[in-house]
Image 1 (cartoon, rainbow, N blue to C red):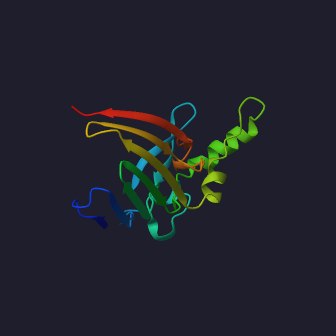
Image 2: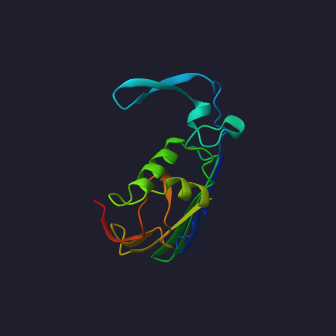
Image 3: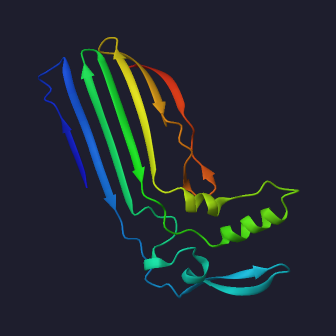
Length: 181
């Protein structure tokens, strides 16, 4: 579901535009006991049959791995004469289910911590709940063909991950010049 709104173009000095979106999904497996792969043991021998149930960290309600059930996005921009100021937010609820293999990876790196840094993906997944990221931008329209902007993503420098063990970008800032011809 999304909603977009803007002030009429008749007012050239002031204006507001907004875009709000919400996504709800119910990502469930319909075949939780189906075998989708066979694990391999060192030496290449076939091990355990892998199913959704025995390879998932949380099988409550059979929610698929790596899914956000609720996502909310907001973007609002204000125009005052030649200046524009905008903010946006992306919000994701906690990912309910990930691969159980992360427990094994953590244990291996914990046991071999004299050789490797310990990976704590499961701990991160369990302790980091919802994700909320704010971005901001400020621009100045020099004339009808030129615009200068300052854009800042992840304003509050949140440490977050949309996929396990893949950290997302820290705060970034950029100056942008746009010439339209």
